[in-house]
Length: 390
Ligand SMILES: Cc1cc2nc3c(=O)[nH]c(=O)nc-3n(C[C@H](O)[C@H](O)[C@H](O)COP(=O)(O)OP(=O)(O)OC[C@H]3O[C@@H](n4cnc5c(N)ncnc54)[C@H](O)[C@@H]3O)c2cc1C
Image (tube, rainbow, N blue to C red; front, side):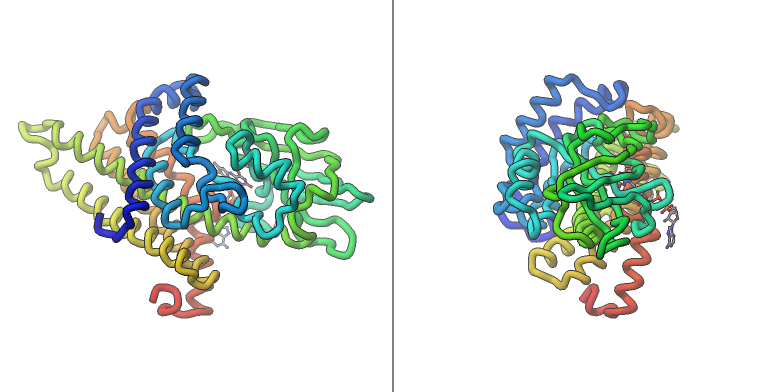
């Protein structure tokens, strides 16, 4: 390891690596069964993750979590990214962004059970007409006495089929804060909450992405997160965190692809030689390794700087740069790995084929590559090169 890591960090990295290595043999079964593996196996994965301290890895001790540093979380997430079919998602994260505003009621009712791994949440922010431009959402919340009434339709709600509650983002329809964003806890079994469609996506995950409709959904005021008008700040906080974690998982995926493609190339023969002897193959692997190293250094350095307390806006730009570069790097690596495997690389039982499809979304969700560039350019204009990268 060229990047200096403490003994504790190395130990955590090893623990996560060994755990994820044990998940990998289940990938093909998941791929061939719409993302599902036998329930008893999935349960044992969850129990093992909990035992090893690999659930709710982003939750601070104040909220009952392990209190890992950003660097430690990156090391764990990088390993989780080595498995396809979202098997690595058993290494779970929770809504850590809520810490400054969570109430006792919300803590007991939703957050504690989430941290303990007993229930899961999902996020309903994106709409048919509003994705990158979150401010374009048209879902509404109206105050009626000690309740809010929620209405709207949401797209791509990830893990909705496994969630006990959903964070629903809307704009206030009336009152003194009309037009500002609000976020709510909504139990999935609340009357008026429904799944209207379960679309198929490129990847084969047991976590589905529902289209959801919320019709006259009445929730008590206690379900409001923070204050009226706070809605967008939570999304920004979450995006910043998740962008860095996407960068970490992209590095893990790229590492696995390079390892597997290199091992294959060292065995496969064509025209009487191992294909690894041909420069055409060597160059693809060399470019992949070089780009992975660059992405990993950016990701680790960003994590270290967050732990050191670097300015929030600088964090924002660095997380965007890490996500942009690492996710695009991993897509290039997956494309080359498919090429190295030849026809085998086009088979769903092959790791390169699965990653080739799965990694594509990392250039789209939590802000597309274009939106990351918009953020980076904006920070560059305001703060200059040396503030952002030293
Ligand atoms: C598998 C999956 C899971 C998801 N999970 C969730 C979830 O759990 N909860 C949730 O709320 N959302 C979720 N999303 C939504 C995701 O965050 C959005 O898809 C993403 O933010 C992009 O929005 P959009 O799809 O509406 O694309 P659009 O915003 O319509 O963008 C279309 C294209 O225009 C480009 N573009 C837009 N604005 C600009 C600009 N200013 N400059 C340059 N180019 C621009 C984009 O980069 C893109 O290429 C998920 C999406 C997917 C695919």
